[in-house]
Image 1 (tube, rainbow, N blue to C red):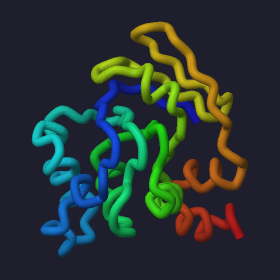
Image 2 (tube, rainbow, N blue to C red; image 1 turned 135 degrees about the horizontal axis):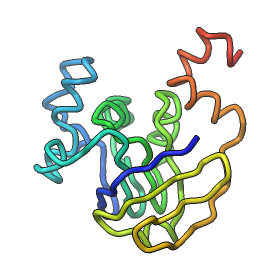
Image 3 (tube, rainbow, N blue to C red; image 1 turned 60 degrees about the vertical axis):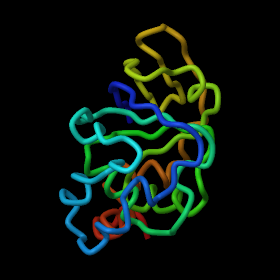
Length: 164
């Protein structure tokens, strides 16, 4: 799994209420959720994000409620990977379950700036900042998590017989 995109950068404690505000939780339509992604923290996100882009963030990304809508909105907006110093535990699990690649790397989160072009080589455990030339080592995903992400989430993986 290798993803390349431009970076949209956020700080610490980005909670699920700013990832997808509660006033939009009356829909399960992924495109509709994506159209409101990050709007309470970054009104320009929806107009700037491109397919394959990468979010970097600080500590405790995805804190707050346990809603699965938050990682769905991020993934549906076109984001391929979220790199943060740390994630809220339930957000981490929800992201993997819906097939959104997320990586904890304090060094990468600190060393990557807004607008940098980044390549996340998750199979080989390397994040490359193509803008600065710096590289950051990360632990590759365990095979079962890699399979879930490659197959677009846990339920799709089960349906395909990839995960039992």
